[in-house]
Length: 462
Image (cartoon, rainbow, N blue to C red; front, side, top):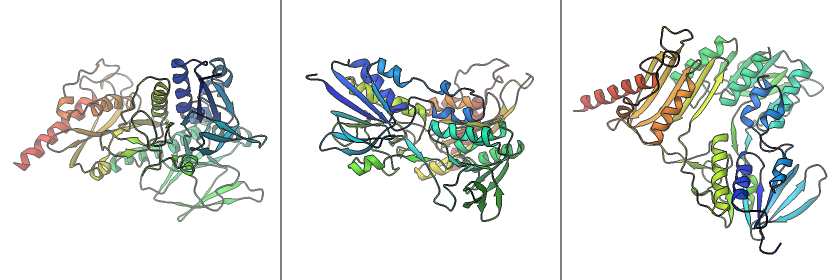
């Protein structure tokens, strides 16, 4: 069709499909052809829901799928699954695409290219790492494989390697499935994005639900049976029998394809983009877990793999590709997770990150209750705030507690986003009723304590 441009999107999940959908809303099929290449079996799904599908909280896989390929085709978006982009030719404005099942290849031209290749799990290069029963968890197919293994093979013992967000969530899934669970982490604490005092609370909670926690122990290899199935995880200090192993070592930006084409990546390994999600290559855009963005507190580049960022960035790219104008300003690093009853949240910088960013910081940690102390269901939570000395500017926050604790981080994230001081935060008009909070909300108590600490520190300097 004369005059029609072509947008080619590599990656059919959060960022890619958000970009395609937004571009289609602004430009009709007579003006813009949209082709999406996705190498997996499914597109537009919630990867964050995988642990809850494995654990049985979500009973049907289809509940994690936002839209099917047929639904996108009905909107004139040509989504092709089981098709893998294997080469980008920037000079020729084309992408070489391989049929995953048939093996055939073809070149697909583009006028604009959207790279949304996501992230890939970190997998250790250790003996036995590719054994049957050792699972990485990143795409929906990984979750299907783990759940199938649990239901079909009836494993008794599971070992989770890594104590970060995905490691804790998968450990919870295994506990719910009735397995004996061990977590192995080379770090001295679980949730290494928290400060050590808050990480210690998580460690106590993990052990409290019957999970064996082995810290400061790097994995040295995986033992296997004659049929290639994993039988144990070996560290320097012990051998842990295992019928099932889940790797929760985090992810890295999936940028090999982009790098090979000459698309610039930054110090985090993510693709460099501007606020409109444009790369430094002509008519090439990128969004989601494969890009790096700006941390609004530290000012430095970060690569944080979260569906919230991917959807927002994809929307921004799609608006711009559709002829509009939108920007993505950056992130403050807000994240929440849980293992059984224990919730954990963080936003902004921890103490180590604040020091690395050049801030002279102080911190306070306050124990309070999630509801009025006399109300049934009130539980203890700990809130930690990190503030800049003298100015009192909030730099970061962490929360560990039970029900109704973690989502309080949203108010703290808003305070960070707007550059508030802890003194200003003491006057926040937060909601109060006994079933929801004590009259002094934990956030306000922590802000008051932090403001007092800033004031006391200034007095000492006079």
